[in-house]
Length: 186
Image 1 (cartoon, rainbow, N blue to C red):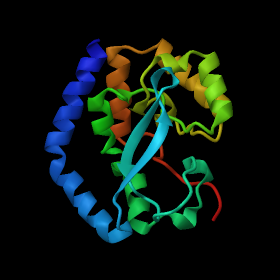
Image 2: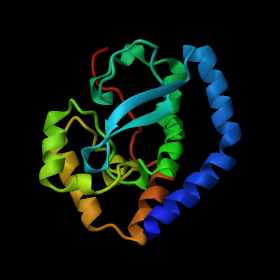
Image 3: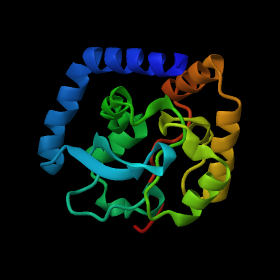
Image 4: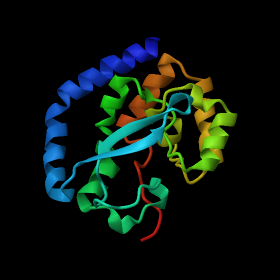
């Protein structure tokens, strides 16, 4: 309950104070892709679907795949900047406010990542809300290694405390992890 309260407080503050940045990115996104927001169904808490919102980093019409499978040629120059700085994640503060996500938790996967879904289910990871950041993200572990990702998520959740929660947020803000790097075709 304490962490959910912190989520709501910080998501609210982030959306209000970050509104000028969100608006600027949105406007640049109109010129970059014509459709600055990206919505995608993801696996949420208890494996319930929810719609994740991010800033679009790829050209419109590209296949919805995990970042490690994305064609690097489909990412726009502005999209590369957004991914590198993790600014593409800012709209997810709305998902946090709605209760679909937490600031810290396992990154929400796609329903077609069967190996990841099975590993997370086996390790009890779906008991938690997915997060914008987490231990795997600051450690550079992505969905290309599903078993390692699920194990890292489970370890993070087993050791979650207010201190660890803030530590992971701080590590993310200080540049921990690489953002969503497309490693697929291209």
